[in-house]
Every structure is written in C-alpha cells, then in structure tokens.
Length: 416
Image 1 (cartoon, rainbow, N blue to C red):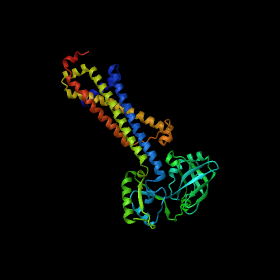
Image 2: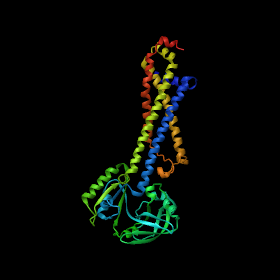
Image 3: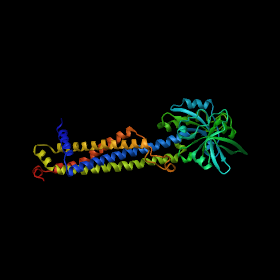
C-alpha cells in the first residue's frame, strides 16, 4: 500500500475514536460538506422539477410548435389556416416531429341566471393527445372530440366552475358574436385544473366541429396546427427548419393565408424568462454552499495540523519530505470530504423521497403554478456536483497544507 495513503488511513481511523478539538473540527468539516452537497442537490432538483412541471403544462395545452395564420399575431381575432395534404406532407417529413393535431379557437361568453364570464372556446379533434388533460381532470370525463359532428359537450376549468357555480352534468348557455349573436347550449362533461391562471381562467375545451362552425370556416380550416417533438432540446432548430420549408415550399395556403411558425417559448416568453431566472438563484446557492464547505474544511485542516505538530515533526525527523506530509493530510482531508459527500447524498435523497411520496412542502398554486414543491432527479447533474465539490475542496485545502513546510522538527517534537 502507498505510504501516504497508509498513514492517512491510520490518522483517519485514530480520529474516529478520539476526543478533542481536532475531532470536533473533523465533525464540523464533515457536517459542512454534507449539508452543502445536500442543499445543492435539492436546489438543482427543485429547479429542474419546476421547469419540467411548467413546461409539461404549457406543452399539454399548446404543444411544442404552432403553425398559425400570420394575421392572428397582429390582431386580437383568430384567423384560419388550411390544413391539407401539402402542409401535412412537410410536417411528417420534418425530423423530430412526433405528433400533430388541429386546434380551433372562438371567443365567447358563458352565462347562467346569476353570472357571466368571457371565455376562449378551444376545439380539438380525435387526434388530440389527451394524456395531459386526463392528468388534470378532477371531475367527470372528457367530451367527445371530433371534426364531423357536434357533441355539445365542454370541459371547463375548476376556476370557471367555481365562479359560475357549475358542476359536472350541468347545462349552460354560451353566446358568440360574429356579425350577430350565436347561442349554444352545452353540457358540462368534466372539470379540469392545471394551476396555470393564464389557461384556467379562459380555456374551455370542446370538439373541433362546433368551434369551426361558430367561426364559419371550411372543414379543412383551423386556428393552428400544433406539433409535438420527440426531442425538446432541438426545439429552436426544428422550428427554424420547419418555418423555412413551409415558406419556401408553400408560402401560403389554398385560401391565400400566410403561415407563421412559433415555438412554445415564443408564445409564452414571460414564463420561460421566469424559469431562466431560477438558474441565477441556483448559482447563488451553489456558490454559497461550496464556500461554506470550503471554509469549514480549511478550518478543520488547520486545527488538525496544529494538533498534530509533534507528529509532523517526528515524520520530518525520520526523513519524510514536506511534499509527502502535505499529501498525507490532503489524503486525510479527502476521506473527510468523501464521508461528507456520502452523508450529504443520503440526506438529500431521503428528503427527496419523502417529498415525492408525501408532498410535505406545499406551495400556493396561484403564485407558483404547482401545489407542492416538484423534484426532478438528473443523475448527470448530481454526479457533476459531487465531482466539482470534491475537486474544489481539494484545491482550497492546498493553502492550509503549506503550513506544514514552516514546522521545524526540533521545535515541533517538544510542542505541547
């Protein structure tokens, strides 16, 4: 066994069974590293969880990419695009696109005998991916989504249901304005909750046929063609490639409408900006925690060196070089950091497990869009955090280890 490692292990084992200032310093240093890595892991998992939750909610309603009529961007009204074989051929042949679905919008008013509320009717067809909305369903069932026949059924948010005092199975009148007033009678088929105020306050889901008829559009027209990607990390690249192909190969639809291609990040920039700001908070926490761990390790090593002055002097008297002795104490410090990392990781994963299972830490969904703190484990980030903490700890410990070269063998052997 290597001489440096052998002596460092003996020192570490002796410290585990002794009392005194150096043992207290070792315990404090171990605790500082453990708390630091635990806080860093949890912070990263929380931010990743927030991002994933909110992205899933936005994508569940709006998909990754939307192809719309250019006039819809510069007007408060919804203008249609024609979804035909030419457009679908481009969509299907573009790499990274996994799913497409049509969406139609129509603004209107829900009215009961006592209340009325402005809403945005969203019509979808049978290709609509119901995975997200199923998870958000809190009462009833989903309407029959199709583009051939009116179901006269709607899915409303919990916010709208409470405001209008509606329950599953109730009927309600809706009024739409377009060169006159059009009235419809809908059955409340189900109630959903996403905790995204921008969606819950306005969106009412129904079938594409009804929404299309209310707009007075042709059967092959809709407000947007929504696309879901296989790989979200290629969102910008896929959006640009698709927009270029549509502009070059089509230019406009069969009715002369100009296309525009928008990503989900373009449609909801304020939410994604807020998510990006969370990264700044994480960096501040990481720097502070690494600083705390580094300071406690430096203090601990200084105390250990001072307490072991006679031991250092004896090693020097026996012919050990300053470099070898420094390596002994650096290796000894590595054992402390390693134990702190193990304890910190176990503590972090225990807290993450408890939160995932029981959701003890709750949040105000009106502010944070989620009811409890979300956590997402990314093993690459966690391994990187551990390696960086280990590397930085070793680097900062080089400075106090230089004190060893100033210790005189003759004086240190008599050091009390």
